[in-house]
Length: 173
Image (cartoon, rainbow, N blue to C red):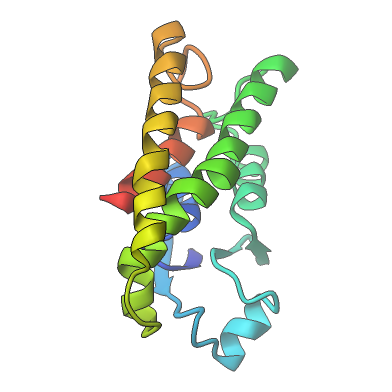
């Protein structure tokens, strides 16, 4: 059985959990406190990051790479379309969420409101919370524009792009 070392509120871990669930891959979940890294945690990933997936006798890290591995190794149900152009669009939107949305929204709201408290790093910086709250409007407007032009974020079928969106948005709830 696969084992995912994760933080429940991490959008990157959530994206991997969604992919595992959609592909019906049984997986044990183990919470990691990456901000208090144990020697075992650092042996699993010397970079000190989650998610970490143990599957098929391998240790996989980095959410995008894990999701690509799962797609290649377990192709059904498909979370990536067949054509290079459609795959590019999925990757573009996943990257947009994992980079731009994360930097401008998720990190400002989640880190300030939740992570600082959990990690014992003080009180939220109100300027970051305000910046994240202001930035989310632009991102939601962009998502609405995409959905006005297609059924799902990256096209006509549900893909990894929709999981990236769900992972980031649900972590803010």
